[in-house]
Image 1 (cartoon, rainbow, N blue to C red):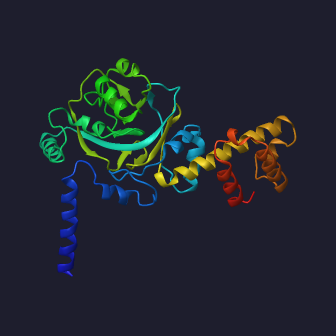
Image 2 (image 1 turned 180 degrees about the vertical axis):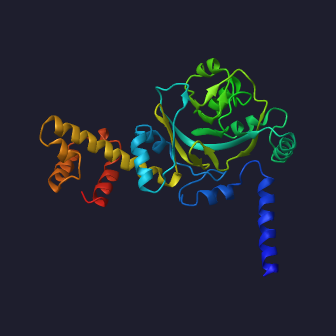
Image 3 (image 1 turned 45 degrees about the vertical axis):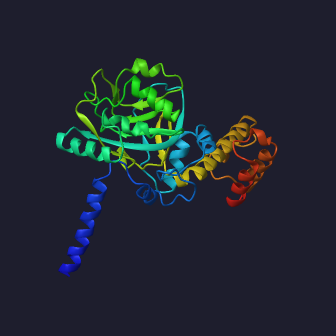
Length: 311
């Protein structure tokens, strides 16, 4: 029994040591984290959720996405109370994560040495490392544990680098500097906790593409995020396609319901409860009159959903 315990403990410590030697998670580790995803992946292991789905996701309301995820048992996916560079715009993308911690010189030295072994730039600050591996469609999501003073993760220089590499933006549970410069980057957007003129001096990068906490949410690399003026919601990659389609159906149901209420064909009580078979049949007829080009999904997707949900 003692020998067995020793062997288990040995392998556990060995695994911890191997993990500690990596700044960025391996592709195999990310595949384990996102094992429910069955589609294409990037070379770093993250799920490659299609650009087409990311575009459709922009039209989904936070409440609809939240409701879908709750029904699937994901109860801690939303975070709010952000400052936003351009609150009038919506942002969606594939998550690349980074975790920051309070500065500790001996640990920072280890991170720098390990980063050098991973062929990362050790001349500048390590806060540029996640930015250097961003690709189009990514969103840089960083756990800065809410720190603002002496913990500003980017200014206008790194902001330009983020947008150049990702053509997208960032979500920081922490601070930024030079907001005026960030606002000048056309097409760029960001969600953050606060701004301060100080530099990043008392904070250090600890990991890239490993699980992080953003407020109440545990975020995994390869998640997809929907961010708008109402907050941010993080979606497991394997649920994105069904979430988008389900939410689009909810939008169509709302359009139908509003129209029938204006026509006084049904009462609010009839629309705002479980629909009768007659209302369902009316909804199906209403859908058939919509031109295919005006649907948010393909007609094939719509027909599949209706059949699968007993319409």
